Length: 296
Length: 267
Image (cartoon, rainbow over all chains, first blue to last red; front, top):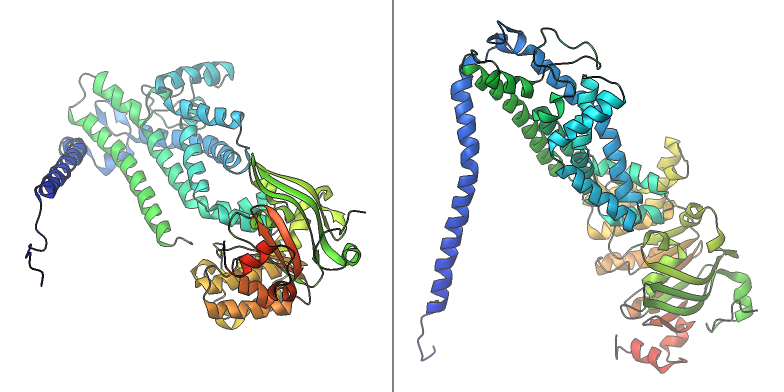
């Protein structure tokens, strides 16, 4: 035994201060996180309490009546599905192809860097600017008129950066060693991409697409002037028709229809946010599932 | 005639005729950094050429150049001349065909995220083999030759990347063999492999020598001694010398640095 009998884990004044700081930091960070969750919880609670009673099968499957003060939301619901699907058809092939090029083929030079910068900037353009671009390009120049096509293409342009960036990230997540092993075997770049890179990036790409869907379905500004209508008593028959949409419908009955019952906008909002949350949940579930069977 | 004028301990003129690969004045740069300087070397048919040298001596860069992998490595510049069966590889139009004749095994096993079967069937598929029975036959033959068949024959459908490290490295060798290469490049294959597996792979290599040329880059001097017919010593981008393995290890060296390295005095 040592003579100086110093207790084994005795704290010095210095590290007792460190422990206090540690405690303080942990509490502060936790509080901030709680603060972050609070609005989400309040919004959801409010919507469920105020809008819940409105929701019924009938609400989802009938049209608005009496100047949109009663009835359901079917045309808006169907319209949003139209808008999202057409936007996906336009943006996914272009976005994925561009991401594959940027990740797998593009040399690292100023042009590639400029393109990457442009993509980031495109993501930062305010949606109302996209709306005006959509009017100019799709409604007027290409003469699509105010239609699902024009609105969806506007949405597609707006969400392209999301698709490109998320696809590129998931391609980059496939280890380079796999590519090198394939190239060494005499595989071309495309053979390598098709057999090794894409199959292993697919989950990430799909997750990005699902997130795009959830974002697209909530957008209002880009579709206001390009294809979404104030009120239409019928469902769209094709991509050149105008349509109602959930997001615009919510805006309209909340601000433009003074005698709509107070619960109605809450009901619409609840349906809209449920759609978005369901999409996000799907994407998270998908990611968890895929991570569980990761191949390396 | 400069061909085969390399100081590599064999008859230079015989080399020019019988060599699988002849390398002349090969210099490799990454930007300003010179990884390999003025290399003259030949790889003979049916030999194991050992390459030893400390880290950063240009061994891996040399293997990359043989396979024209500089295409995929930004900043890598290759000068000089490499002929493969007498053809200048710079002038080979179909670089994919060239690469498919060269099998490569990396330091860390790269089991592709495919099943064991598909790992080995990939190269045949790439060259157009479609028939199931033919693929089955190739897969079994390559796995047997890599001394892995007995261990995986009942789980060909499980993921190659889930095999143990030693098994994955043998899977990589089986995959390289499935290319039916006539040149096999091994880059420190035993780094992540246990000693028993290493010995098994070494036995496989001694066998394979009858059908192809093998370049064995290794950090283990004794591994070169066990396997190589000739041994080359690289040091910080310089090709110090190449000589018969038996000569080098019995102390007959042209450059004292070779002796020092083999004796473990530096590196």
